[in-house]
Length: 148
Length: 462
Ligand code: HEM
Ligand code: HEM
Ligand SMILES: [Fe+2]
Image (tube, rainbow over all chains, first blue to last red):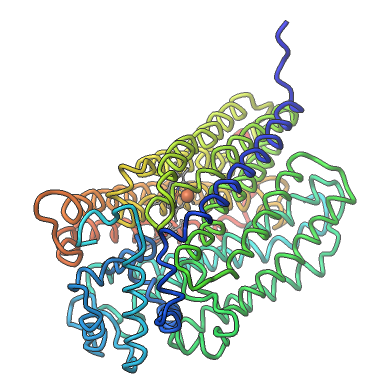
């Protein structure tokens, strides 16, 4: 005789299933942590420019750039992807710095425009180096093309 | 209302609705900025409006979850709340912290806000949805701990039901996973990896437990169907949620520097994530069909069934649309993402909170079971206005997203982002129009609290 499916059985599936798949997730996370050094460009972080990149990330965060842009496809969808902007700008940090520095303070009439942040040259360098570091992360060939 | 202390839920619900209004107003500002780029520039740049929009959403959902808990936990536990005073105190702490944070966003530049809140001591700001100053985040943790303590003690003291237990598990998970908001390494891949432990494990994990528990509570109350049946469903649904949803986190690990096997794990497990949402739909309709009585609060039933349907559409169907890695390769971070984000948040978490508010508010305001017939008609109009306009917002954004993916990421001649945005502006105009109708629906919803206040209660016979 088939047993009826009871509440206790449902409860056990919940606890057992959750525990099992959470442990599986932790195991996958553990494995990922082992593989990341080959993919996440951490060499750049421990290199000579490491502190500059770290400063760049902080500036990126403290000006909420993610509130308009995506970075590796995450963020807001109002302005272009920046994970590959370094390559889009011809592998040039100077081009990135020039773009950020030249935004008109009052915007462009009728169009979306980026604020003028009045960064110093040192801050501009830091952001550009941060974006260069990001562009060298192995993202499994994403984005599909240079347009991001 | 069976216990005096349930009354502490009321200010939570009212503040939640007020923040909902702020959220939608800033949504409309952004929607206009999408097509009239210099609207309010540089006074309210897009990123500032976006922070207000998304943070107001999160805070009001949390407020409403807390209100819901303060309402239903005592009733389920059959005892007064452990400390109503603590609940009221925490309400004010939370509200003031939220108000100060939003004022900071609007009145200061974000970098100034970071500076005066000493972000450098423990940098946590400037990441999507987690933009709050570190001090605000600490405040959220304190409020959450006080809340969990209060609710936990109540449950310990009283009758232990499955609904209370599942709710408490969900709320505890919410607090625990929020702690990852404090982990922000320089290594961007690690930052992103654990950022999702807040965002994904919330909406596709522990929040679904809260959703299930609230839905079960309202269905027990309004249909009179046997608790055993409902509780069994609840267990099965949340089991499927976590079995698929935890490893399903992998659908965010395709392109952020993580190993490529996540394309398999993420696709397979997240493709099953719609199952618990589908079960929720079947569950809700099943229980309502088997109802033992007709509850006079018709809007509450409508919202409950609406949640079950719209959560499945927004999270299940629109989630599935872009969750397989070969599709996500082209849609990642596009308007498709925004389309899904809107309908999923609305269908699951906005609607479940309105469901419990709809059920509880008449009782908190001294009615026996329901509002007047007139008020109910207004509320049901607001249901249709908001829900249908959200369907259209989603459809327009999906149209925009398909074109965006095609023009920018596929084909012979991929075009630059900004050029593509010009091409698809018609869809953004249509989205904005649908957004205005959504706002009208919200106004009608609020009006429903004020019309027919002196009329007699609706009865099942009408
Ligand atoms: C009244 C109409 C609304 C309009 C015009 C609107 C507009 C917008 C816009 C323009 C964005 C930013 C997209 C970007 O980053 O480029 C956004 C983001 C968002 N909105 Fe709304 N919104 C509205 C209502 C709502 C409602 C009711 C909800 C909640 C259910 C909601 C939840 C969200 C979420 C979760 C995001 C972040 C999406 C993501 O990161 O993918 N919005 N909204
Ligand atoms: C109620 C539940 C859900 C809510 C509230 C929700 C909300 C969201 C939001 C706001 C985002 C954008 C995050 C960002 O800004 O980067 C997102 C992304 C995503 N969601 Fe959901 N979601 C839910 C359920 C689901 C389900 C069940 C699936 C799969 C079947 C799914 C698949 C996805 C995918 C694949 C992305 C990434 C999109 C991209 O690559 O840009 N979601 N979700
Ligand atoms: Fe997810």
